[in-house]
Image 1 (spheres, helix red, strand yellow):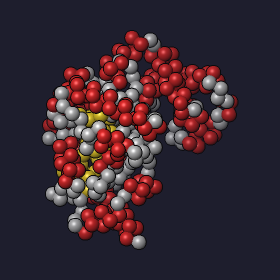
Image 2: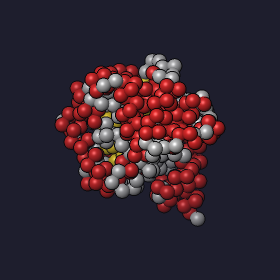
Image 3: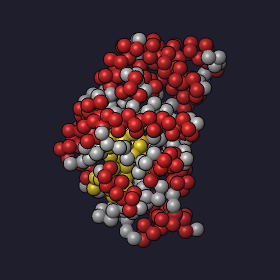
Image 4: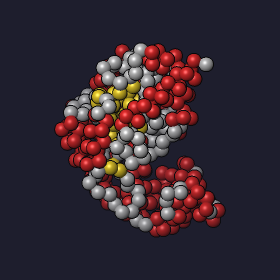
Length: 362
Ligand SMILES: [Zn+2]
């Protein structure tokens, strides 16, 4: 779950003229909020972090006090009109990434009871091949095994791959991951900074074989972790299903044609399962690097209306529907990393939009 601060990227994708017009025409924003793991309790070990159903309900109640929830239908309609609705200051669009069964079990009843229509973004390779996405392999292993054991396997993998693991300094790792234990910091540093990017799939494979078992054992984890095709079909019929690509790769790191084919494959499979065409995508990892500007052309070629990133911030216009900004739920009122009241949150968004608009005027 990578996030990039709004300050560095806001202006890169902003349209100052449009913001200027919007601010003089009233204060309207589309605020996308994303969720991953939602379960009643979490493992003591790290690896899987999320929120409980009680926290979800409480957060939705707080958000309902400062804005209105919109559905995918609403966003598609606003994108086509190239204009945000002016009924409310804030419109919240709720998303859930990764197609997890716990979202169906623990979040969907809450959304249904509150009349909220989110979109569940599903990667299709787990359904097609009954294997975990690499990111979920690592989450799963880290939630069940102590960092020292995992570190040992990754270090021996790194040695085989010719990476000089002796250079991993605990000091450097703990500086990067200051909230983690030294061993967790070392593990994360090795995985995310030291191993070559193109060897990450092989690391995830090695971890799966050592800690999860053979393909049959992994398929059992897949069946518990992800939603069934039947559930995915129900979401499609309810207008609540979107693409999270096929292999859960960072699309921007693929060749453009490969990124196109990966998304196209997910759309074909989801339409086959759900019986209706997909209208939007959530880019895996969602950073600027994972969702480069050329994804806009791919969305157009494949008939998608909009895409959501993980670049934090509110959307003050719909000039670039292929790259809507989105908050992690931790970063909005009711979230663990948000100390603001709902009123303070609204005030900050308003101030940030005004500041951007002033910059645009210069
Ligand atoms: Zn994801």
